[in-house]
Amino acid sequence: MAFGLRHNGPRGVVGLDLDGEYIAAVEVTEGAISRSASLDLAPGLIHEGEVQDAPGLTEALRDFFAANDLPHDVRLGVANQQISVRSLEIPHIDDPKERDAAIRFMAADAIAMPLDDAVLDHQGVGEVEGPDGTRRERVVVVAARAATISSFADCVKEAGLRAEGVDLNAFAMVRMLAAGGDEGQPAKVYCHLGEVVNLAIAIGSTCVFTRPLTPVRDESGFPLAAALADDIRLSIDFFMVQDGASAVEQVLLSGPDATREGFAAEIEGALGVPTEVAPPLANVEAGALPPEIDPYRLTIAAGLAIGGRS
Image (cartoon, rainbow, N blue to C red; front, side, top):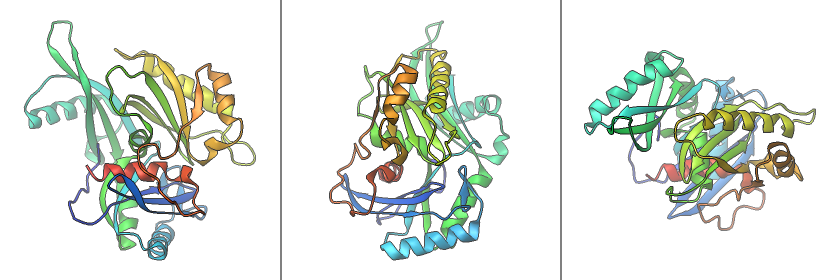
């Protein structure tokens, strides 16, 4: 799934994660990371997934890409409270245009924002048989305010870069961390701890539920385990009331804050669900990363990069 702005070209595509605390960029070539870079981001440029200082972010991007000699085609990730994600069930429709129209019609009632002001995309997550024996399709629909997408895209353009596409950070996370093959796989929670916490529930490699969280933090800025566990529990409870939902068997944490000693154990103790820190680059070959880069910063960016190859 990807929002608009897609172009096709022969150059490499860089996954670009604009976390409120840092920039991370990854280029993936033939399944392996070929280039990567990260930089602490000055406070106040981005807050809770929204651009706050466009000139400052533009300058930071321009300097960052020049200093690291990165390709200028990028795939952006977004995550904030202005993004709505809903699961819908529609009749099976073979004609793509009719199917898209049906999804948009149903999304207008399910999503709490005017679709004229939104960028909309969707992804099929499987078929079921309706009570009358007819085929029905389950889809995940994502809507983001167009102004939010444009604010990031404009900064990228002004920095001399080209937005090849825009994707949801939660989907990039699942793409990077989940094992392939959905048949018979248990549901798992994936939780990436950044300035915005990206939470997703996936069956195999298919994301079936996602929501962004604004974590409660302690005085040093770390997410509070008990508060995050409550948010995860509420998300699981909401997911479980959906038709066809399967029990969540594991929680996988990612992001730099996830590696704090004892944090995963605190989450597990509060939830009663097995919890561990996921390998940060599970679905690519990491190779020799620059020694100064924390690989746990690269999960979202790498997931965006491999999405850009499809």
